[in-house]
Amino acid sequence: MNFKGKTVWITGASSGIGRAVAIELSLKKLHLILSGRKENALNEVAEICHKNGSTTRVVPFDLGDENSIREAAKTVLEQESKIDGLYHFGGISQRSFVSETPLSVDLKIFEVNFFGTIALTKMVLPTMIKNGGAQIGVTTSIVGKFGIPYRSSYSATKQALHGFFESLRAENVSNNISVSMIIPGRIKTNISINAIGKDGKSHSKMDEGQGAGMEVEKAAKIIVRKLQKERKEILLGGSELIMVHIRRFFPRLYYYLSSRVKPL
Ligand SMILES: NC(=O)c1ccc[n+]([C@@H]2O[C@H](COP(=O)([O-])OP(=O)(O)OC[C@H]3O[C@@H](n4cnc5c(N)ncnc54)[C@H](OP(=O)(O)O)[C@@H]3O)[C@@H](O)[C@H]2O)c1
Image (cartoon, rainbow, N blue to C red; front, top):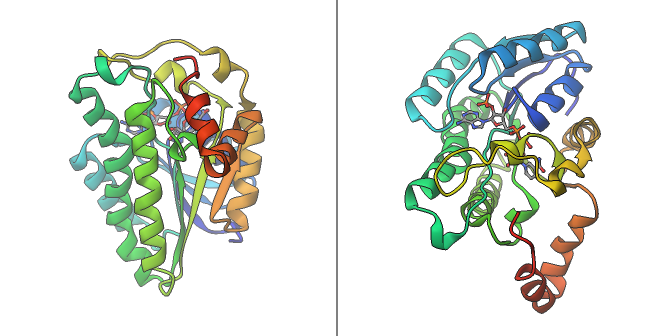
C-alpha cells in the first residue's frame, strides 16, 4: 500500500512497537488514528507525528472493555470517511505458570489480546469492505507459533489470532482485504514490565532477554517496509527466530528445547 494520504488506525500507539510504527509511518504524510488507554502518551505521539508532516486523531479506549471499543469505533466511523489500514499492536504479556494462574488472569489476557482485537476488527470490517478494501495488520509473536513456559495464555491468544485472521483473510480475498501477521521475536520495549503475573499485577521488570532485544525503531522500519509490500507474514527479531523453524522442521528438538527455556 502506498501510505501517502491514507488513513491508518493504530492500536497500542502509546508505547513500544505501536508508538514507533506510528512515528515511522508519520514520515509518509498520512492521517493516523492513535489508540491506547493513556491519552497523555497518545498526545505526545501525535505531536511527533504532526512534526513529521502527518495529521492525527487521538481516540483512547480500553481493549478489555467491549463498550469502550464500541464507543471508539462509533466515533471513528462517524468522523472518518475511510479506514485504509487497521494495525493492531495493543496487547499484554504474561509471566506465570499454568499451575499457579487463576482463570481470571487467563480471561484478562484473552479479553485484551484476542477478544479486544477481534471486536474492533469486526466493528470496522464492514466499512472497509463497503469502501472497496483495506489492510489489516495483526501483531502476534513467535510464541504465536509455539508454546514456551510462563506464557501459556499469552501464547494461546497469539495462536488464536493466527487462526482467526487466516480465516478472515481467506473469506475476504474478493473484498480486497489484505491481512499481514506481524510476528516479533524479542523487541526492546516495556512489554515485560507491563506483563501480568499470577496475581494479575504488573511484572514491573525489564527481563534480561527483553532488554537485549532488537531496538524498537529498527523493528518499526522493518514492519512499515513490509506492511507497504503487504507481506502476509512479517517475522522480525534476532537469533530467537530460529525456534520458529525448529518447531516446524524438527518438532522433537523443539519439545526438548522448550522444556528447558528458563521461566523469565
Ligand atoms: N516487545 C516484544 O518483544 C514483543 C514480542 C512479540 C510480540 N509483541 C507484541 O507487540 C505488541 C506491542 O507490544 P510492545 O512490545 O510494544 O509492548 P508495550 O510497550 O507494553 O505496548 C503495549 C501497548 O498495548 C496497549 N495496551 C495494553 N493493554 C491495553 C488495553 N487494555 N487497552 C488498550 N490498549 C492496551 C498499551 O497502551 P496503554 O497502556 O496506553 O493502554 C501499549 O500502547 C503486543 O501485542 C505484544 O504482544 C511484542
